[in-house]
Image 1: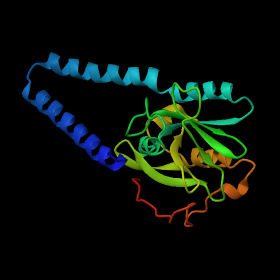
Image 2: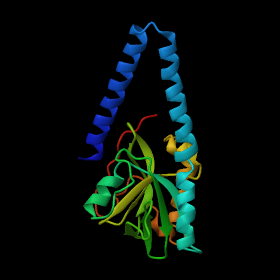
Image 3: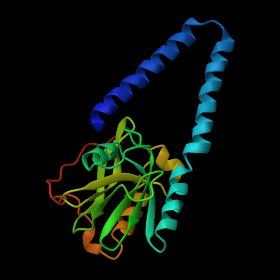
Length: 212
């Protein structure tokens, strides 16, 4: 199942749950039931804020300990990353098919390592090639957002930088974060930056419309 198919199922599920919840609130005169439902939503959001949001930064710190002296970029995966992992025969465990799960990118002289949670080694690597690092669009949750993309013509990776974990987890993409990640990924190799409008390595470049 591709990222776009998962997106359709995800959106349908949200609409279904929302419709059922609204219907219950409207048809249930018991005010206490409504308060309980609201409380459950609030508690769920708080748990997510306390547990999930800091994960990207914490995970990146663990990778830095394994790669001392190497630039490590914290991020949240796009919805395409699970598909990439399966295509390359890599582990996709602990990654959400709609994106948002933590990832860390270690920038070595010749390759960029893609690290996933609970791993003792990178899940795969992408070669540092001319025009291989840039800004693209990908699925994140139920919409398309701008992401940092790394491509070498054979393998690729895409993610939302998580310098601000709360912002990244919510899919709020800031140009400054994207540009900072592109600069760090191409550090020492200015020729590696992809020029918008030109072909990516090994493929024809095509832009995807994104939500405002």
